[in-house]
Image 1 (spheres, rainbow, N blue to C red):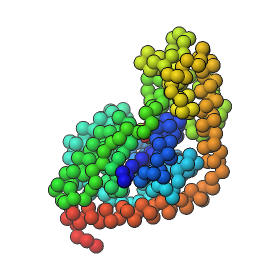
Image 2 (cartoon, rainbow, N blue to C red):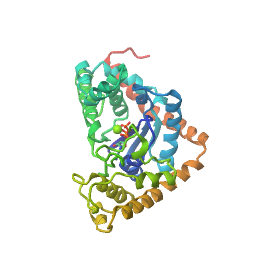
Image 3 (tube, protein in one colour):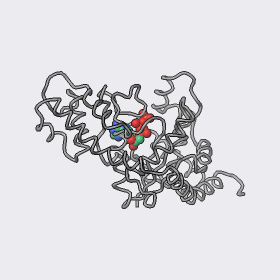
Length: 324
Ligand code: ATP
Ligand code: MG
């Protein structure tokens, strides 16, 4: 059975794009597929961050994933830093990764050119991601285009390690997320809806109050003209609203376009659909006891270590370390 792994970095607030593009597919596949879900708190440390916010969001993300329907009995559900094997394997893999290889990562080039002092961990972040993947013999990593180069790196490193030190790791591959919908920012529909957006105006956060969601949608940028058409190239704003409506109602954006005569009417329908989709998640989240979430994470970490520890032991011995 393929094993699929998805991580969520607590570097900003979870939004409808994460819900549709990543959380939904996890929930619908978790009973039939071998699924690993983790909160990648260590990745949040690679950029400037507020320690209290990372800690708060880690628990919030876990609660939101549970509220959305992640079942910790069906999938492996953990916080990355609670399983120290991630960082131990990270080091061993660094010893099998080229400096130039890490420097060639497009995301590193982009992120390092944007900010002031660059942390060493930003350069080695894809190697930690390789450890996340290889630790659990992951076969499939559902990622967007921006992350597929990192999965390639994990595959290259695994192949090299196996060839040089003996068969140790399963080779992973990047797969397209099962749902193709990619939601764009409401205020600037040329960019993806994102946790790290400069302004929250275009991001529909999972914990936004219904009134806030409606306001953001009513203020969404539309295109010149008045016609409701699904043409992402020429009408990105309206097409994005149709994509959101389609994702929330299980319909097709092309078909939905014909139902509306004006932008106002479309926006009202989108707001209703988004609120209906997110209300149960918000309500379940509010009812969750944080101590229950912490207990779930403790059990998840223990179960994860049962898989991770033998893998790291195998890698340690293969690369030349004396068994304890
Ligand atoms: P960041 O800006 O920090 O990269 P992000 O919003 O892109 O944050 P990630 O943590 O990178 O979120 O991604 C988590 C998951 O959510 C990934 O599987 C990704 O493909 C999915 N995802 C992120 N943004 C969208 C979006 N706008 N539409 C659909 N899926 C998305
Ligand atoms: Mg991203």
